[in-house]
Length: 215
Ligand SMILES: O=C(O)C(=O)C[C@H](O)[C@H](O)COP(=O)(O)O
Image (tube, rainbow, N blue to C red; front, side, top):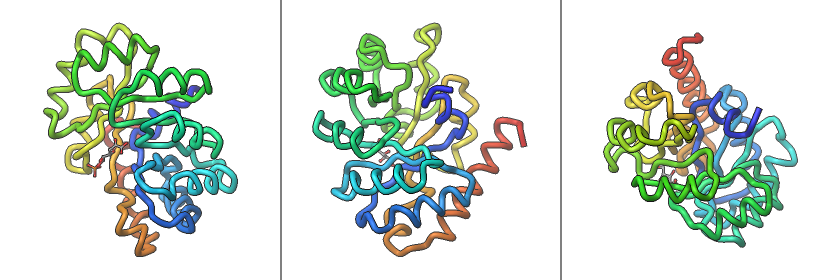
């Protein structure tokens, strides 16, 4: 199974901004306990590299990726730390070329057909649709994706996704998995609210099972 197939099987990717790498393993354990062993650790904080490294080393059962990867240096840090995939809110051809060179599955962010064609030209099989709700929501994505479905491209809508609109996104077959911060918020991580994060993960997993009809 490819990495993006594994992400698709989870259907929800917790997007994490974490300030203290000491929270890495408690966070990983909270997600694992909630039945959602996948995380996008964003390079929005300087704790990203150490967090990815700690999880990759001590919790290999959690599929850990890097988010908000903006340049080649961050991509190198992500790969060296053990990230299994990477994403970015936007598309940078040089970063994509570097990801290919380092063998890291990379989903760049797109918001227009032109972005999407640049991603296809670079050989991407998954893209982030960002910012998903403000950009027009599921109906916008459905319309942008329509001419490209034959390419097999899959989407990771992120930005404004919540339990309330999860079903609308996952009912689109071109959506592999949504991303969102609601499962493990920066505040809950900082406060050590692990049981709340586990409960959020569990609720998302249950909802995905309902929506995909395999509960
Ligand atoms: O940093 C990245 O790589 C991003 O793609 C942006 C985030 O995923 C969104 O900011 C999610 O934000 P929420 O709307 O709170 O779920």
